[in-house]
Length: 166
Image (tube, rainbow, N blue to C red):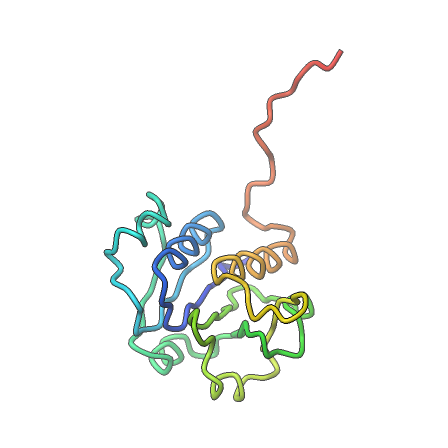
């Protein structure tokens, strides 16, 4: 399996981006940040949430969505939105695909969603819940993509000591 890519379109909350960065490091996933960002990448909250993993993160910044598209020509992009008709488990994530998430307050802009309806995905939720936390949403969909590829290149063994249960 190639490297998966998480894209954050104009993220606003540094702790979410820090948590997502840590998840990306833990899975060998690239992180792409589309500006404007709602924070500075040097903010303590960002580094605290990402802990000491931020230095190991493969992260690329873009001035806007058009810059992102220009620098990733032909990219297969899935757009996570509460407005999608299909769930995140209804699609097959290709090697090297991109999974985009919008800013916390508004999601991905409507015009982008309109132009890419066939690759929009959502996470099912109960009742009138508007959305999940951004970093939780990234983890849910990213790990589904890895599950579909048998967790390729991820460590599968645990560290629990073996006990003599006699």
